[in-house]
Image (cartoon, rainbow, N blue to C red; front, side, top):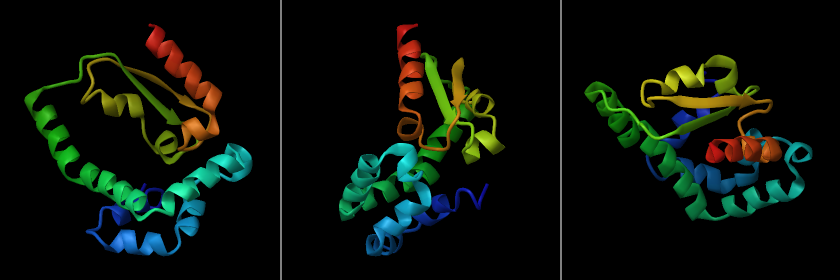
Length: 146
């Protein structure tokens, strides 16, 4: 899991370390994570590159990961300890060929926090909307129609 998700440990490091390093070569960073342009389209890859050319985009990305390792985690642990669960309908989607799909059971994991999680894996990696846009949209439409 750590080798597949090393970026989690890197992006949570205090400012300005990840921001500075990513800002030097954002294309190199994105090439490591994005599916090849044949799978998602050159225009999608170009949009990611455009966004990551902005320091504030890189900083926002790092802050999201930092929150996941700190306040989000603390809040989740407090909710589990208190027996609180999300009670509204909740859809969990993941890529079967991604690290999560290969190593974890997302529906079981979410049962700690969600009363009745529903969901499915899609035949792709981590970037569902980019790799399988039609399938992702179908799953979302089914969920919101129910």
